[in-house]
Image (cartoon, rainbow, N blue to C red):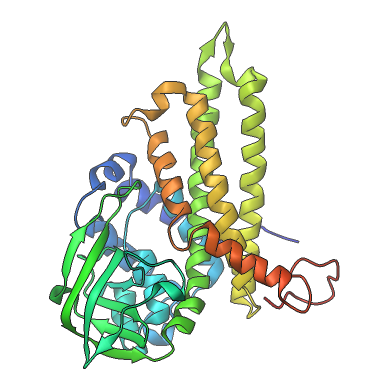
Length: 364
């Protein structure tokens, strides 16, 4: 199995990293914490110029027409830099849910789409959606809506369909979350809503496959950078006349996280390949998101142990990765939902998802 990227893909990674070094440095990440709208407009414009907002949108719809693997590259670099932008909700999830006529403006960055599905008293699944339309309007609340004040269009999941709402006609209140990113409580009070689709949850469930793969790639990139910082410090910090990395109490955990990061990366690539090639990728995407986020969290925990008490100082970068790792684990479907997806594929199908019969591709 060849996991090497092509020369063009390597060039793409280099371009993205160069852009993010300028527009998403650790200093900029700090400046954006708990702010509204929570991202830099100059970065958004640069992503548009580079064709990265419409990366996997078809060329016929104004996008770049690239593959899931290129999107993985983009999100690994987003994770390394902890980039804050509406890209995930607008250009990945939103682009999969939006009417086709919206796509050219989404790909150019002219329109920013946000998606509202979670409710304050509901869970992450279909049972948690209780909002219903009435006479072409919506009344109720959605919570943890990403970049709601930046959005020019809002897609809302209700019990009776997917609806389009003008965000300016809603009340939006910023929430305080561990990752300090831009999430909002959105209130609808007889807000006009246009129907987009009747099969809202089926469309959302399918669009989440792409979203989970992107989030998993972000987690892998973040874990890699956190691991690099820990290794660098373990080589530099001297205690008792030796670099602290020479002590087994730190060397062995660092070796374990290096192994786990590589395993998570391969799982993400497999999920992206399956999705791109028309295989059933839902279970792989759930596995990738669940495992990569867990590895990200544990890698930053080891990083904090390497740095010791100073690792929690806000002036150091490790705490940025530590907080975002925990936030990411419970966002975009948390472990409980993902475990249910994997368990259903393993236990409820005609054959287990993991099987010794490699002659046929997985069916879940």
